[in-house]
Length: 356
Image 1 (cartoon, rainbow, N blue to C red):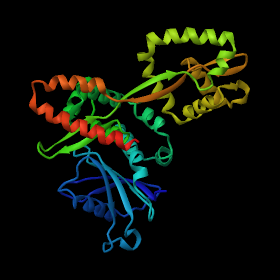
Image 2 (cartoon, rainbow, N blue to C red; image 1 turned 135 degrees about the vertical axis):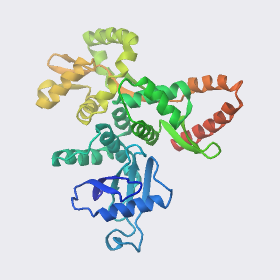
Image 3 (tube, one colour; image 1 turned 90 degrees about the vertical axis):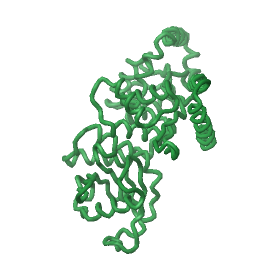
Image 4 (cartoon, one colour; image 1 turned 90 degrees about the horizontal axis):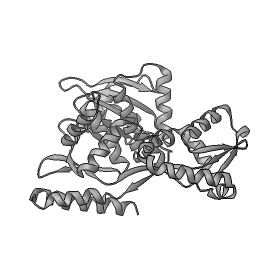
């Protein structure tokens, strides 16, 4: 488990500032200076993205931190904030990559640094819980935010964009003010989840974003479908609801991330997946409240004092074949687009081989 989470501010012509840390409160500001120094060994100035640095053997805090990993996510030069984790000795950084980016997103979206102990305790708990979330819940969690949905929609339309063009197009679709750094952070979060890939184009000297997978949220037949088939009234209700769902599935898709992206709701959905039918009086008061929400969304029905799962809300990653087909049409008269297509197909190949 990490030792501390911290938030710091990059100052171009001054000393980086420590804005907050938890649970360790008395973090030495000079340690933050060292962390930025390690990042700057790689680049002249920090750029948005994820960093892993190892503390050296011959620095001020080497007695305590030598060889230990620090992981950080830098917002970019608009917000100029680094959200980082100090890991324990021999602790690997990769398990915290997605969790750190997601926590950074919440802090950047909030627009101010939390000050209350309870808020930091909640952030710390969320960060630790995220590392244990199944991929289904992580993907649903990010798509609870409109920014992520707009970015995916834009990439499904375009296939390949520079990072700057993605930000510009996404801003045009979002009805409220949002910073460049925040949108870029969402792109990196989606990259960590395997939805997008961000690569630096050394010829053009720009960062490009490639669509790896489209994401669809939908309701599928429950695992314990035999329970429905054994009861004529439930079988008839299921057929009726399926007919209705065919015409409303796109509108309902936006509601599903809010269900499976929340840990308390997801846990009860998992129980319904395993059991199919749960007696109402076996649920706690909090669980009954969640069950009523699921009933209102058509996921479960109440039948004879029991709750029965009617639909299973879930997601699917889809190979972006229609986006590729449209991009190929663009390549007929655009030589530059052909080179992008070649790179994109190679990146897709690498990404799907990694999933095997």
